View (tube, rainbow, N blue to C red):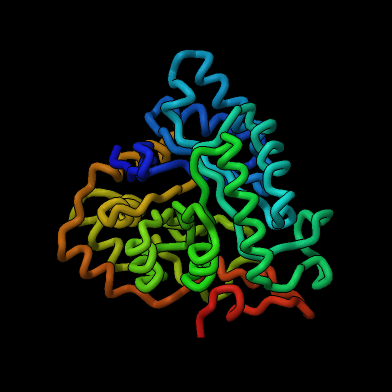
Length: 318
């Protein structure tokens, strides 16, 4: 499995298993099967509500001698109700307790959006705190302190724009090492990709297959179905593989890590096999022409009436 390397010598496998939307009662079995098949990168988050089951599966695999802790790259994320310098370490310790681990490989700020500490997910505008660069800087101070304490080996962010990355780059003594964002052929974000590469920030692509199974309230009625795109289907036919494998291979060919979710052993195996597919320069040109700037997870769930956030302030786009 190809990987990206960090300055300290650590390596993160490019293809991982995402666990968003993986239901309790299913996610543990999926993690066990993924590890048996050779996955060595697991992407988690406290807000997914399944880290205890994931942790039990990891510990079982280790106890059975299938893998060591050092051989698995485990990412988790700081939820929005734990922004602020003094809130990061307690949140990370709760995640470690749920996972049954002593340390993470990577801890990310899940969103640049802050909500009130007692709120799990906002239901009214008053649950949201206004956008403030000072709060982002304070949260990053807490991330650096968690790294210093040995609770995680690497720190980064998720859903951060170029401008918000610049806030941290100008402020912090430790640079963000990863930015996890929505990336796929319909949302290629070339400016962000170029910026992160220039700054040595690794990118991880979420929703690489179009996230067709996300909750209905997060879908637009007329949104495109990425897996059905005729260009992707044609390339898949030419390579004798599936559309999903083409989409994953596209990221891997560009050195971008990606975290497709599945609980099906067959799909897990198919996704892992995408690492062996080599797209041609012509394939890459055909896919590059598909960019439409279509966000499937556009953050509109932060924008209830009276919200201090707008899509412009969230993504810093015109």
